[in-house]
Length: 327
Image (cartoon, rainbow, N blue to C red):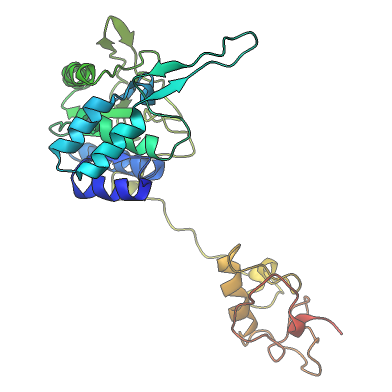
């Protein structure tokens, strides 16, 4: 049923194109890539970019069967699936289990059951109405996490745009019985390593609370770890290619790749595809010279000889090749 509902949701337009999570083929990496691409595209256009991150309070506990079924009917979903969804969300009971608790079930009128694979999909469909277009910006969500991105000539102008978008988003959520968690709200003013202007500390005011921009991290105001910077904006910032390694003096050509040429315990191709492809090619190279009196003869340095090299194939499992066993 989950697969069927997922196909119907995509075909009937129940999902927004900027929703990720709880959907086949759309994970957290897709959300991160989309956000990074949008920020970089706006920065290349010499615009200041800011993002407001929001978290829905309660999440799956806010879905009402009547509102969700009304959305499905409006999109022309099969009446059978609408009735199944209403039955799935209605007539449920729960009770709390702790020492001394009364063994009495209480009816549940809102929310989706925990542990069901259908619950995340129904929630994503339910919150799809919260998405709206932002001129020169982006509204992106991952399950119950929303990100509002705005761009303009200054960060203070971005704050004004985000405040208006948040007010509209809050009104839409109120009609669906959804609110946002204030403690989990974050603000980021995006910068690049070529920005020479002062760092903006302009906060945003939402519902009587003040949210300051996230602290600078690793020389970037991106909120990303220092080892994960955004891609460079200009080709001049691209990393320069490293010069090829030269073999040590007195060693045979390609001697610097000897660590890759272990004659015993060849790795499985799935665990190290680069090594699985490189080693047979190196053994067929004419620079590996030596006696070919026996299949186990090795050249200096412990490397196989050219004549006893294995064929250019991949071994199906982790084992010692019979061509490489010593006599």
